[in-house]
Length: 245
Ligand SMILES: *Cc1c(COP(=O)(O)O)cnc(C)c1O
Image (tube, rainbow, N blue to C red; front, side, top):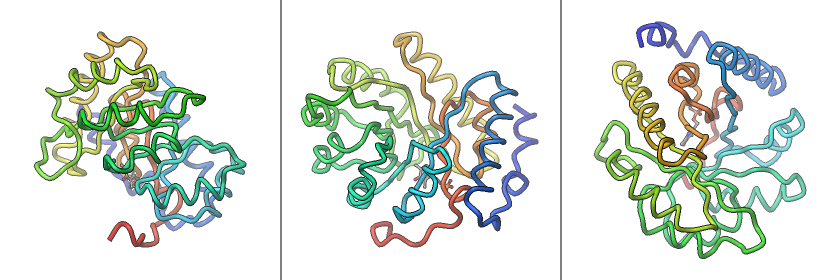
């Protein structure tokens, strides 16, 4: 654990003043390749495009990126419509309200924020019959933060069992957004790694542990992350989104 702690210094990984997307993207890919070599496994990049315009997403696709993460359903739907021809892979990484389940099941390929039972049958019901199963991750409130989204670790098996009942859904693994506190981050990532390994014993097909953001993804990679969600280190600081206020 100590070795990753020592490495954790967000400022050395990215120079956030780099403005050219191509340069930043290459740098990010190089960093990920190096982490893949170090840890001996594939690490996918989810480009977090919330609050960013469709034009910037398009530019990023020209560099080879296909998977994009969005937090706000309305905002995402508008971008999906505008970029429809590009056939991108959209991930919902923000909270999911029941009333948005139809739109989400129709538009997204992945939902990373399953944290309660109620939305599971709704997503299955609304998944279009001609679409591939919706890939889902169970979001875990790993530091038991009172105001945070995510289920408690003890609830993971129940949610996984529920998901497994629906052929329209495909359980892929776990997701977490730990508190960005350097004193607790390593413990939180390690805990997620353990929870993922335990779940994998019951569901051997799961392959995705989504954790790590701009400031901490190199550290998350050291604890088994297979998908990192990077926004500001790729696109620069976010313009304020009206929905985020
Ligand atoms: C915004 C967001 C990110 C990306 O955050 P950055 O610090 O900009 O990389 C990743 N995951 C989730 C769930 C987010 O809401």
